[in-house]
Amino acid sequence: MKIAITTTGDNLNAPMDARFGRAQKFIVYDLDSNSFEVVDNQQNLNAIQGAGIQSAEAVAKTGARAVLTGHCGPKAFRALSAAGIKIYNISGATVSEAIEKFRSGQIAEAVSADVEGHWS
Image (cartoon, rainbow, N blue to C red; front, side, top):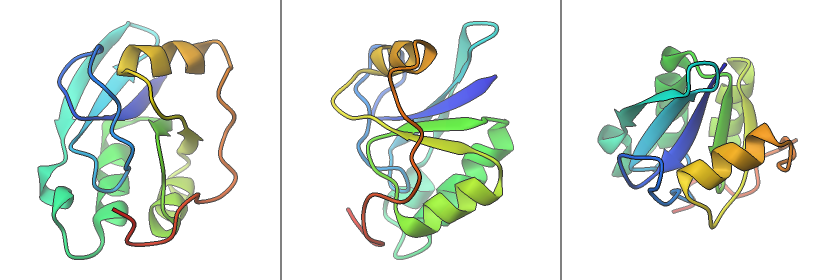
């Protein structure tokens, strides 16, 4: 299973990015092979509108089944949910810490967006 983690960096020791739609990058981690790819999200970082929906589409294209992020707005939440992608909110962690917390079941699945739209 693949999971996408919002981040500001290019490796597993990078800090998470608290934002989903305007995250700098996503690390898409494959839990089965313990490998990852970095997906740049620059095109949505400064988008006037639609960043969450466009970011959700980008994550869906990677095959990820879950997103680990600090915060997720209502439009992104709906788009991810419609694509069958589960959302987990976690903050203040590195990418590797978030992966380990996800693997050990320490993060609860989000049931709704946790910020208003156009949150930055």
